[in-house]
Structures are given as C-alpha cells and as structure tokens.
Image 1 (cartoon, rainbow, N blue to C red):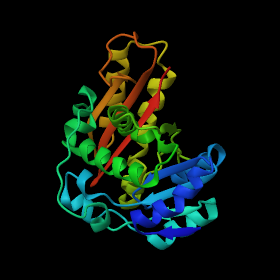
Image 2 (tube, helix red, strand yellow):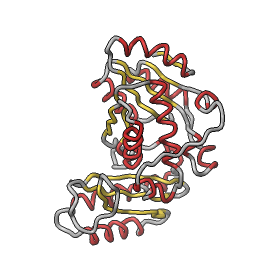
Image 3 (cartoon, rainbow, N blue to C red):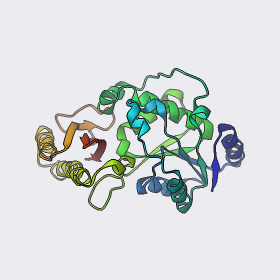
Length: 279
C-alpha cells in the first residue's frame, strides 16, 4: 500500500493505470476508520481493480469550528486498518494541497439540500460536494463508495455528479452496526458509557418503524418513534421522519415506491444520525 500526499503524485500514479482499462475505485473518508469503512474497501475490491482511499478532514463542511477541532484523527490506526483491508493507495493531502487559495463554491443541489441535515447544518452539503468534486478530479475514479448512514449525503453527491455530468458511478453500501444495533460512526468515540447505552434508542426506534410499517399509519409510526426516543434521558431529538428516498420530503401516506426512516439526535454532547430503508 502506498501513501500519497499530493494531487500531482496521485494523478501520475493513477493515469497510467486508467489508460490500461483498469477500473479505479475511490473510497472518500475523513479518517477515524471503523468496520463500516472497511466494508466499503471490501466492496470496492470486488468491483474494481485498484482501490484508493482518501483521508482528509474537510474544513468547509463543518458548520461548528469546535466540531472540526475535536474530530478524531488516529492516523496510525487508520493506515493499519487500510493495509489489513487490502487498500492499494491512500491519498492524505494537507488542507493547503486541497485549498491552495480561498475559493467560493455554490452549486444547485436541489431542494433536498435544505431538509433534515441541511436545516440543522446550513451549508454543510456545499462543503461536502466541494471536497468530493476535488477528490474526483484528483483520482478520476470509475466508481466511488459511500455509506448509507449518511443517506442524504449520498443523494447530494449523486446530484453533484449529475450537475457536472461526471463519469463516475456512486455506490451506497449498507450500514454496518455494532452487535447491539448502534450504527458505526467515527463520532461514537466521544460517547461516555452511559451515552453509549442511551444511543441504542435510535436504532430501536428505527427497528420499531420497520417492524410495524405494514400495520400502522405513518403518523402513528412517527409519533411512537418520537415517544421511544424522548423517553430516554440525555437524548435530544433533532428530527425523526419517514420520507421519500428520492426527495427526502416527509410522507403522510405510503405513496412512494421507496421510503426511508431517518433520525438525528444529540446524545450527551455527540450528535448522531441513523436511518433504515423501509420498502
């Protein structure tokens, strides 16, 4: 496995590979890797010849400077995980490399940008698509892999790819969970033991909705899910919704072909998101 720190070096390595009709996969991450990230590498290895994983904590997508400051950066641990997973190249640029000078960025990501996470973290998806576009330009991948846990993010990246008509396939991979149901997240490291236990209520509420989706109305399901979450101390709910997977608009009736339940909550001092696809 080779570690690369500059865009020029990455291009010089990957362009000859691309010219020999090999398929290149990119797994963009912000580091603090866990088994969920490893599952993306494994899927990438199945579908491509060469796998590149980027590690870059992107400043433009953080709406809270404190959140950026405390984001975990266990690089030695991450490198070891990627080596064991069989990753071919790790792209670890500096902030100066990715943002050599101040720049403005704003593209039309559609109405869904302003819902859910977009409402609570204004400008977040502009920052996400800004860095993903830079990473796609640098690596020129045929296929890129993202986790379903950040469902809205995947949708925004798909919209960005369509906006620029980029020739890259976006693959969303299933959420990887701990044995007790908690969705794996780099942020889980910040949970105290009691917070860690309280956080289980998010997947419990989602499972209730999935198990009862056929037998109850959407308003009944959302009400019950909110009651389940609000009954646990130390958990502050931002939203729980059942929405259309394409628009993220809330559903009142089961009209959409594909529905998804999404939740975000602050558990102690740590904000967590989770979701489950319903049909």
